[in-house]
Length: 466
Ligand code: SAM
Image (cartoon, protein in one colour):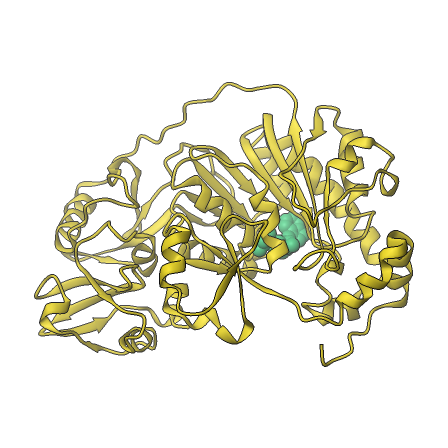
């Protein structure tokens, strides 16, 4: 690193006490460049296909099934594949929590502190459109960024909430099969990535955050159904926020026990002496930057004792006649064969104030909760037609619709589309002579356009342009 990172004295002293002989190696890690990672959206594309089409060098992250290192200068956020929602940019260690929580399609999953969506997008991809993802954040501006990332990823079975966790607890007692609590923390593990965190650090902050974390972890435990799994994570080294919070839950809730996570050679273990001495704490994972190619992290996986019978909660809605008529017309125009690889489910369509949504396939009671989105925003009913939304285009998978204009990544019309320009399209490039088409780098939709006389009118909204 060409700049000298100034770390707080009290932090260094505590780390020296924690690490002993390893302290020098830990300090040396701050002289090295941090690594950059991206996580493939396996709901939209396989890792093999991604490796085939990605136009910059990538290298597999050994402890993350769908994670890759990239070089900073590759600037992957500028690649049209990013605008198609095929990957999420995420620090490699931060990929670990969602990767260590087994999630099965059809389950009800909660991400309690979810913004901007690093874990929620991974959980949503694992659900494969089945079941329900509730993604919450207490901050409205951050919840907006969360919604956008989930839309980019094409997650349609989602409820994006902007609530205080206490209110969610009342709405969802023992409801979820899986919960992630990626808690607000002192961020000690991210000092190399974000120097401002080191400047703001004080030992008192950790104590204050530990109080918040204890409240949040109890609330999460209340929302977990018997037999369910709760993954607690932070990006700090502070024992009071890590082993301390975990010990607190073990003491308060005898029905919660720690369980093992898939191991990796660079992982460290939780230390019972940094908590209440409970030997179970060894099941926690600590990630130190001197042992792995990533920043600092902490993870604990709890299971709630007992088991619960699955409750059938299938949504049984029906679209109104007008919506069905104009949506059917639109589907015919774009040649919709499937939605995310399966038949479109009309029971999930709901129209509110001329806006058409595709609800999650699960009947849940969200009444009274503040939320940004329930399901996927499909588009708007206009007079005698349906106008699709940009998130609808992003939710469509490669094989879903026939009206695709697929261009190679080297084609500069892709970047011009993302700047809002109108495009010239050759006759052989478009399947239909006119009407709605999806523009697709390598076959993967990045947005809609409307073709008239070989000119594609740009339908990418200004707010979605990079
Ligand atoms: N899980 C996110 C990801 O992977 O992108 C990062 C979450 S960040 C570590 C913690 C989040 O908790 C912040 O977005 C913050 O707004 C939110 N937060 C802070 N206090 C909270 C509280 N009391 N209840 C719920 N969320 C809270």
